[in-house]
Length: 70
Image: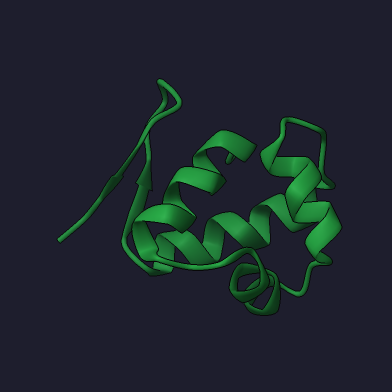
């Protein structure tokens, strides 16, 4: 499951703001900020974030990094 660090990196690669990400996954900005700083987030919200990023070509690596698929 996606980590806050991966989320922040993926957002940066895609050029998405926190507000843009929140709009895509129906999340409050304060929740995203906390998650990206390392605090916990409900599994449902983490799955939504991961699904949106994977649809955009982001691949989550087991070592905690990310890559973009062509």
